[in-house]
Image (cartoon, one colour):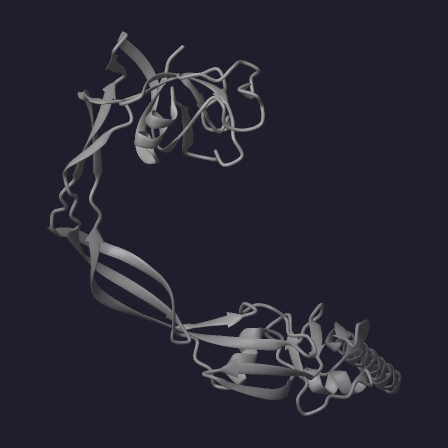
Length: 329
């Protein structure tokens, strides 16, 4: 009986050892499965999925058969390699960087323009990168690091005078008379001036005061539109200063006929129709009333030809500047 119990005990012990061994083997195998991580690799415009036991990104890339040059860069989507981590490879490309007047050509795998600038030791403060910081470099890109600066300046500028126009019924329409000359004043301003690479690009006025007040120009503007003539008071719509000449009804080869088909006589005047339309009545001091009914090859712009009664009158008149009232209808 004792021998049978001894055999049974040995059998049970051996069975327990086998069970424990199987459990340990199962745990080891399960542990290895748990240790594998599925990661993704983005490189050379391709995406790869890799199951790996490695924690080192470089070893994982070697496992995937991806080689790196010294200038290439890698970035992980997580702080450390775990399932779902994306490892992105940035191949080195040629770019140029201009900073403080010097252009440098480099090979870089940095994923942003800001990191390229950091690679060259370009500070972040008071620097503006073109293209902007987050831009991904491409082969042949020209990057410019612009130095920003500013200064506070005290400046003087003219305080421009105003023009005041005052209607005056004692002056004829079209007449203006300056009764007070304008004078600029002086403004003092505190200005913030901004520079890019030493060149002024903007100025902002921070504060401004008037040190010397300006003096307005005052102009009296005539509004009276009537003129006294030998025929009484006439209303006019315009006043022109014109170069006047004299002619006789017999002048020219039209046998005394005007451009409008009526006979020339005293009181008929020749004008440029673009200045005074034909058929318009005018008043010329020293000559009298006139009807714009004729033209002439030499009568262009502010010129007027007055028909006279006889040669003696025409000779006395000669050529002079006259004031011409263009009468209202």
